[in-house]
Image (cartoon, rainbow, N blue to C red):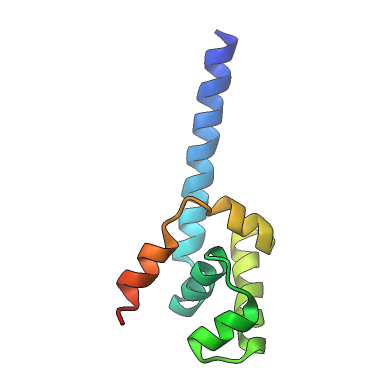
Length: 96
């Protein structure tokens, strides 16, 4: 009984966390979503600036806003969203 309750609690906690992150994602501007996706795909701020044709400082500003909206640091953000399919999202929203 205790094991089952523990498993159920973990599932509910994960669902709530997922909903929180989805709400945070939806609160991002389109450019912030791009930066988030690229961060989670493993790109550095310099690489992101290059890909998006914006300055490094602009990437840093967007990143700061993203971390505040998610209430996470860069490494925590990557970990929290590791199962999101950013490469597929990027490819579908940025056709060659």
